Image (tube, rainbow, N blue to C red; front, top):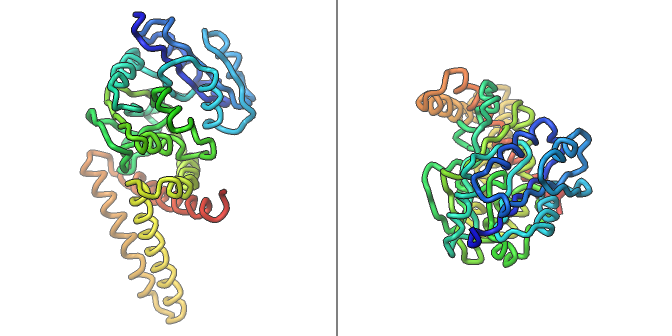
Length: 330
């Protein structure tokens, strides 16, 4: 037992009163020596009973001035003692083996960080928007189908801070968390670790249950926020695989949008619908292909139509968020 590393579990929260106890109960029941775990909650100016509920449990409670999750994690790290820093969120639950898997995976010298799948919480599986996050071709949260060691994050193969662990010494090597990132902070952290020569691991045994967004508006807002972090990530990591992918995707998006605008203008000037019909062809073909894909994957016809529509709206929201980040964010 003396040889086991100390693990600090750091949780940024804000108005998590309805979910925080489910998380803390799962953490208290972890199959790992209690004296080798510390749980640190960093509250971002909650206006509900988050702190009151969390105070029932053997946890350290800190506060931050409302600067966001990344800054909260920084405060938690500075106050922690663990050789391993594990992260999750206030609307998650973890399985009993969560820390055991983390410690086992990070015992390998070349592995700097590890993470796995984020599944929809059982209680909201009847919500089509929550289920979408697990079934979308463009996954919102990571999915680890098999154990993989990667040189750097890839498209839809990345880690999320709601289910991630990092060696303290490795995080120190990259200078800690970059709190300039309000979104994309998890991908930035992992990319920075890999650029130092370490590897990342995806492990299907490391998973959490998460209360995914449960409305279309919440999903679109979330995706727009992710998009705003894109330009900062590409500027900091110009040679990464993700940067190359997003650049190609954005070029394709703006090309298609330009064709659509030109089609509308041409139709107006020529007083014929043919140009706009031609310009809409890629959208129609893409939508039909999306519906066919989801049906083949076993989704209902209703889900196929809705999921494809959400995919399209998310592409648009991400691209507009990216444009906003380019023009206005420092």
